[in-house]
Length: 183
Image (cartoon, rainbow, N blue to C red; front, top):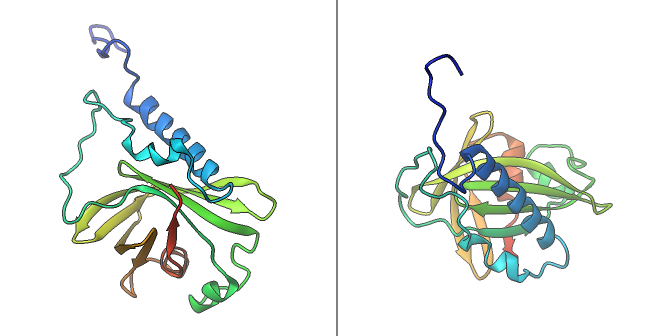
């Protein structure tokens, strides 16, 4: 801070925005990791979407939702060698990954790769926004975006993408199989 510059004012008892975002990431990873257990949502997972991580002291602004609201929650899915080869990738792509668990909450998606040996690894973090009727745009930390069309069935979320959207890995990961809702 330079001479004459005022210190930023923070409401008593509130954490800086960066801390709240980090806390949300940790909470989502813990919820996603718990969902990896037996596939049954815990009471914490069932209420996860109702938690309020960002409050009015947040400095970020979000555009109002467009189209149908996206169904936040915890989802799980597995891909096979055939799914990867259908996308034009080697069949052993992610051969050590048993399944993925993604938590969609409040505009952020936290993807966890669960390996065959049971270890869990954060795979990616995306920000998402509704951009059309049953459509979201995912944007990763490098600014790369994917437009996904979605449909929610009986406890199952299915994504589709335009054929030229994203890389083959993205198309396989997000569209090869439906995602089962586990929380």
